[in-house]
Length: 243
Image (cartoon, rainbow, N blue to C red; front, side):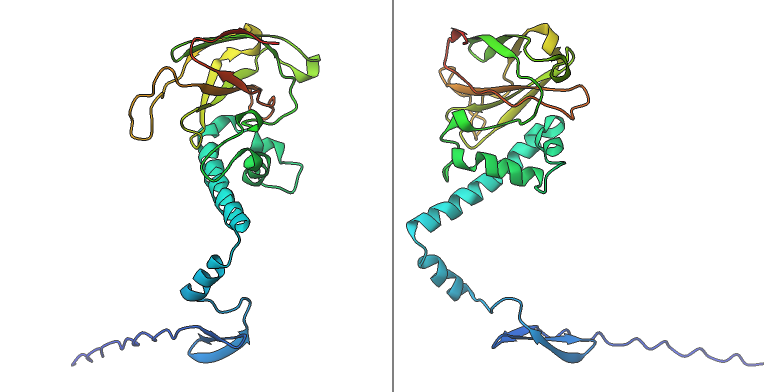
């Protein structure tokens, strides 16, 4: 018996995808080869029209747009640096905001389009745990010693809360950094730490005369509760009693 030859399987040629166009408030698109129409959800735009709109912006509008874009980038950087000690995430659980949006809203007014200009009002951490009373701050080059004493009622303070320190180098107002010190507890009352990265954007060493802005805060052991951060300006050779 002769075997029947199997015919070659025909493959359909790919359908050419036609472009979607917008004209007169109507969008024309193609679905399964058929032409369809619907009202445009947004007006047609072009590079030229966009450039004309941008050219018409006032200086204030341009500045607001630039600041918004900068703070958006800063918040993304800060979120990466905060990693496992990010107070913004648990803080927004009972709100309708996202953690990045709240951080942006709180810190936008501390910035211009190039970096933080009002370090005193910048916030690394938000929360309801009691803030300890920071009593003394010393600095030797890039090594810092911070002392504090307990404060707050029992439900708002725990001996095993751990220390985190947000900081900016004064010459790098667009580069927030975070140092978590899980071995340092609230009960210790003191912490000595060395900043690990006194470098510029090109890895060049920073001058030890650089002012550092630090923001200590405490995190609960399960990192779901925090104190707010406190701002401390630290010049070279600082040895200050804090009030």
